[in-house]
Image (cartoon, rainbow, N blue to C red):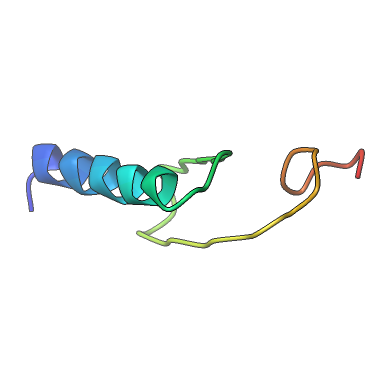
Length: 53
């Protein structure tokens, strides 16, 4: 899979999230980590995994 295809796949995934009603998305990239996708849901008004909540 080319880098361009990977980018297109990420954009598609994010578009699907926002279309389904997700209003806040936090994306973290670690070049040293193999491909991994994790999803957390938080229904409060602060950022996901924020120390302030």
